[in-house]
Image 1: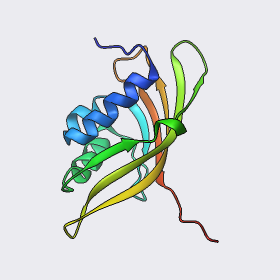
Image 2: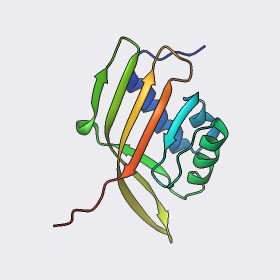
Image 3: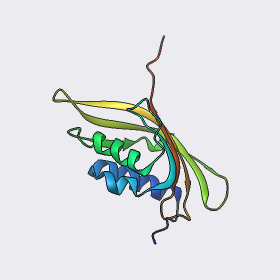
Image 4: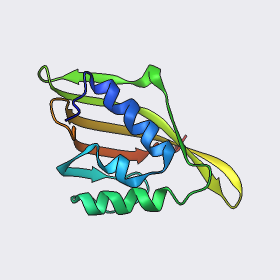
Length: 131
């Protein structure tokens, strides 16, 4: 059983696993009852199979990567093991053979005492400024 020492460790593992493109490895971080509100889909995902399918589709993008904006990272601790992390990251991948960046905001709720610590994950692209 693998438990994590800090919520940041879970986040860094998530980034590493997304960059590797292995959907099963990514899904292994999500609790069996986790909710995913993904960046690039209008649908809320509530099953491990759905989470795997979402990350399998995302992994088909050439040049897929995630870059954290560490200065924007915020942690709220509800207890020794229950934490909320929020911040900004940029997804990068090719569209029509051009590498594009998609700045996105995220919130993770996690219980680091669990082998599969991510309980809830919401991510959305940062909207363009209207001014």
